[in-house]
Length: 485
Image (tube, rainbow, N blue to C red; front, side, top):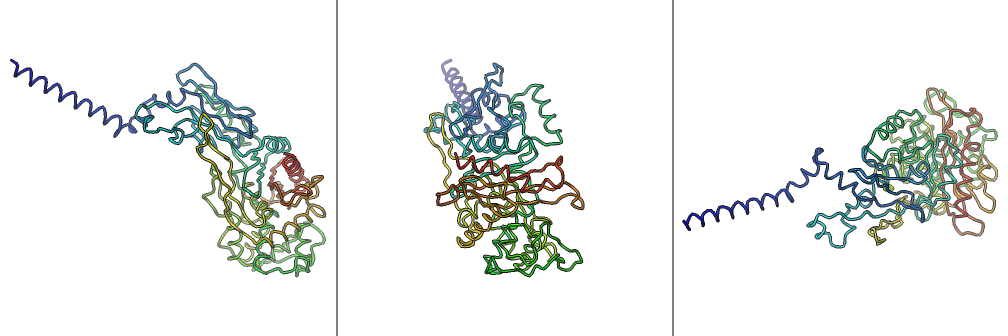
């Protein structure tokens, strides 16, 4: 009898060991399989079972969490949602995350292992860390100035600190309220359908995700290439542009939108935006050197993140002479995001150093302990300090005695370049208005802010869309506010 009991006991012990081994296997080896199964609601319940960490602009919390009392308990809320939507993106129980909400999701949701001093203990107990915070580089006053100045028109603004690459403002209009997408009910689904069907595309981040022909603002890149490669030695010397320029290998004649371009010097050509002068210069510089310079400014880079991904700005690497001439004045296949053109202005303002742009200053845990921070990083050196200084003087001329007069800020030195980019079949669509520039307060040693503005306003009269009339006043509001801030 005792022999049977011993055998039964041994068998039960074996079963217990097998059960424990299987449970351990489920908890370790196959855990991810069950966690990722769409039928498993525990992950979602756990994810939304605590408040999400906040995103901050300056000392202002621009996000929050609302207790719904439902199984998916906490929904994301946004303060001034349309104002900051191009920065935050959305965090939705139905549609996931976007932009910074996606890039910093691990910290904000409390799943990032850097949030825990004792990660092994958390791993064993499977307890949830409270969400951390993401402190952005955005200056609220500058963000509001850009948003207000665009006044609901389709367009975008990107403003940078040239010395560091900090993004001071990132605005896209028309915008939307991310709070509408936070939940999981019928209202959220209706909001998604309405926003994604809207022809004005309010959910498109025009500052990061859309590329435009940069028009005459690209002439800064062409001028930098001409100076760096010795094609132009004296910016005040007359050029050979006597009149309309016949594009190489064609009978097409390129004309100037302004008077006074015949034999204009490079300095004067930038101030009044002469197409013929800069198109000729682009051809003289040559394709290889133009491509090198454009790529040093950030074009053709598909790996740039801020940490949200940035659309690739393009400068074609295979062109004939006519196409190169048009590309040199920001047409043909040349395309750029507003952030990219702000980087061009920032490189000129920063003595030829192009700093990597960034949107997150630091990530912290729930107690305020820094778990990651961003340090200024040199991305490229597209030109020498001497070339940058020359371009700054010419950009100042474009504001004081050229097409950018409406960007002038009292008490500050402003340099800029306007642009009017044609698009559509036969260039029949209303042009995009551009302005890029920088500013420094009188008495300051270096420029303190660089900006790019694009306005796509189909309702405007064609004669009023020029960058100097539409985009420069927006830039003035941003530059002035940044200097005061």
